[in-house]
Structure formats: C-alpha cells, structure tokens
Amino acid sequence: MSAGSVAVVVTEEIGVPSWDLYELSIPCTVFGKPQPDLADPWYDLRLCGTGAGPEEGDGAA
Image (cartoon, rainbow, N blue to C red):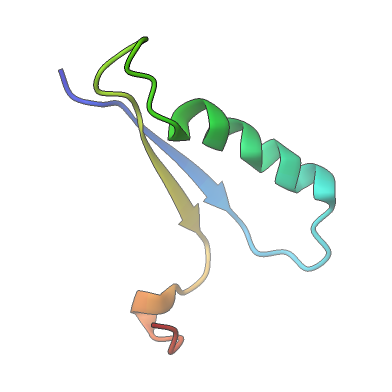
C-alpha cells in the first residue's frame, strides 16, 4: 500500500494574521509527522505556494 498524498496551498498575503499561521500548523502536525503505529506508510505532505519558488528563478539557492 502506498502513502496517501495531502497538499496544503499557502498563499502569499501581506499582513497574515497569526491565527492563519496556527491553522496552517494543524495539517502539518496531523499529516506531516510519521505515525507508524497507525499506518505505514503515512501520508506524503506537500506545502505548495502560489508564487515562484527558488527553482523558478528568484535567485535563492
């Protein structure tokens, strides 16, 4: 059996309230930490952005 996939889209907004960061932490805690006692393999968590990433030419390495 293969791991299920979960994608969380993180949008770029200026002035993001702390509450939104807390809400982002929930799926990261639930799906991002391996839980071999419940299922093996666990979920494959992907955080996805809406802007250009380092691979897309913003110069970050």
